Length: 172
Length: 405
Image (cartoon, rainbow over the protein chains, first blue to last red):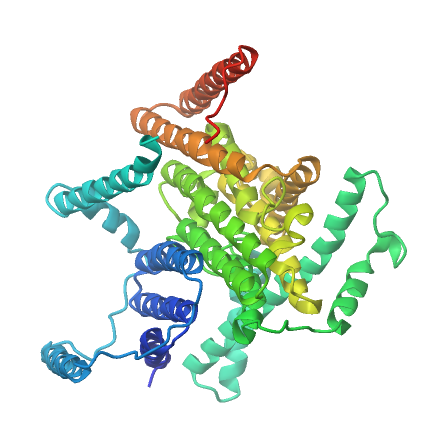
């Protein structure tokens, strides 16, 4: 077993344990912090795939912005941070069944891929992945249109957020 | 000779050879050497931190017309060690009702968010932890971990002042991250790379400070805000919320926050040197002359880098000890209504001029780049003056400035 495989197993276990804790812990703030741990585990997996850009973006966007907004919203809106009552619905077994089916299906699909279980090939030292990513995002033949559509969508969300926040003061 | 040109690689190969002769496999030996390297780097940063405590106390004393520590050792140099002993032997209190695990994790996370920055800090062309191709973004990512540490500290203390301090800090850091991200794109555009070594090497002829002085000023302001230092120290505003997020921390747990803050300030001084002042290089081509070949020796480069970082750190201290704290609404308005639009204008200007003058000679490029920054600065000052005049006129004519409802 190589060091890379050990790291993968450690990160995978961290990811799964924290993902389970997100939904089982009763303290909302702890749940948000377990979510941070799970997102960090995903970042480690990206790092093992040598996707440097995705690693830092995962941390900046998901941990630095989204998780912190979650925590902020929870702390500002909830008087009681501890949830009471049942944590599961009555039909939990149905969901569990669906999850098991999907997981088994995914595992079967994963084993069907010809290169499954192989370590990623060594990348050449001088390969500049960031420039390649940037070029493919702004080159017409590649992902220019999806990229621009996504930015327009985000802009619309931004304008909507500003409008939603400002209507209350306009009424006066 | 090999050691003087590439010390880290020399030591690494020496240790790997040593471990493999002891019978370890090559892979295990490499992992072991890397682990030792990480520990040495962290120890170096922490030892530097001890020295920074002394520097900070001496400099603040000068600003406040005092002498500073001068009893223990020459110039009070042993004082930080006395401070550390004091902190370590103080009673370690975890408040009743605190979230014990989170309360104890927070100081470690706060110090960690600073120390991981040292992984990408190149002390010299051959002395660095790792040469990431996304180093500029890594700087932001480490900062967001610092924000997380402060939220955890503020919340887990179970103290309303701590929580208020954490809220303020998050408002501060989340908003000042935006001009910082935008401004970090400017060295990226100028150097065509996000790697800090690439940015340093791109400045061997001309510092980016001269290409975009406005970018440096915005970076300085947002770095001070990111550090939570005065005038942006609302998170620990002593006169309002006692000590903010670290009010409940005692002994060495407080020490971690304190040490982290000092090291963070120095590290940002280092990043200022790297992004705008040529880092370990930037001698304007001097090092190519035969008489100045010695400037490329790694240890000389490291000394140059530390000097530049210290100067940046000194500027941060200078601002901290000369400015009063600003009000929170002023702080947010200053960011969203002034810094963000300005940084966007500077970014667009830099990208535009950089593209148009792609083939121009160096001197034309530098002059037009600097000139365009100057034009933006003059326009901004004129706009600010007009706004200020309008506000003063509103006060003079008695029209209420706001609607008190």
